[in-house]
Image 1 (cartoon, rainbow, N blue to C red):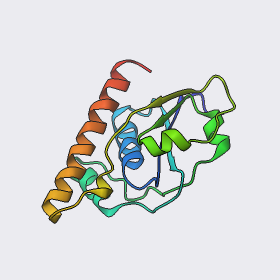
Image 2 (spheres, rainbow, N blue to C red):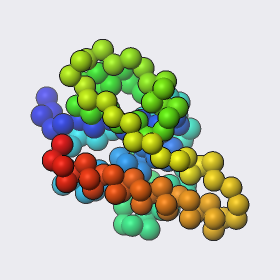
Image 3 (tube, rainbow, N blue to C red):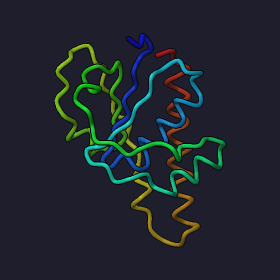
Image 4 (tube, rainbow, N blue to C red):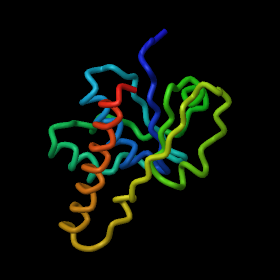
Length: 141
């Protein structure tokens, strides 16, 4: 049995935001947490999310895009939704000890414009998620 706190990041497609959060918490927490991510659906790992994480030295290319697992959901210490849709449609958590938080971030996969503008949106969301992860770790959760 793993005695590390389990952090379960959720978003709609488990392709961008939850993958970025997963990558940062794994990289920055010194293996203090068991980290998993999932989505209401599995849209596959977004190549731009992989690219912007690689820019900051974190490789998430081996991550998989997964659908929410009710067993993991109810075993988690923290369930953190990263988009309003996942927050509103998250399956019911039966375990009253699970701490559920919502950290809302815009979906960079919906960004439009030139490739440069789209990548700028991915970087903005990446940096905002990193700031929130730094705060989470700093608060000693």
